[in-house]
Length: 305
Image (cartoon, rainbow, N blue to C red):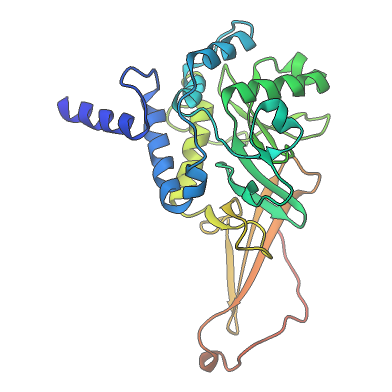
């Protein structure tokens, strides 16, 4: 017992949590793993994370849903970390009392939940402080009546720096959704239907925790890596890329000394839906290949679902 208590106390201390903090143990374990990965591979992102939300903010969450039930596992996210101090584009950033992203600022890529860049369409998703999350939800409800009428328990908990992508959580069952920016369907589940239930999905609110656990697992396995989100400007925008860099979602082929890798990312908030990343590189030495350089003359992609 003493050994387990010592390990728990150490984990709480590492996360800056008080001994009496009401945080589910699985949140402590998951957040500790996530912080460990961030401190090693993305310290700039790790530096933006705030401490636990205060009692005023947590009470505001309860009041926001009319005193209805808020799953402890959902509130546990903000009990362990009250979002990020990461810049957002001017306008809504002022209303949300968030740092403002200047036009020449290159720190847009610091979203903890990763992102991607497709031509001039750029995403990096920030975890919002609880008060900012509630304010953004109010703004969305004013312009999206179905959200207010049909989804009263949904709260926007994360958004991209430019508000193009917004993630919402149901505070009752913990399910995670993405705003599609379309009238129908207005929201799309972040976890596809039919996916096998993981450990803890049975508990009220477990969906959000399971979603963060899966994201953390993909970081640890190297499926998501810190890479240039703007390929043409690698020095200025190295964030967490959601284009798979390993695993079954990555296709690799090699022919005559040229290696081709391909991966894709689903963008429910964009009318295009899917985006693809194709990379080519030379393998081996010039002597092994029989040539120094080569030029791509034609290509044919076979894309299958």
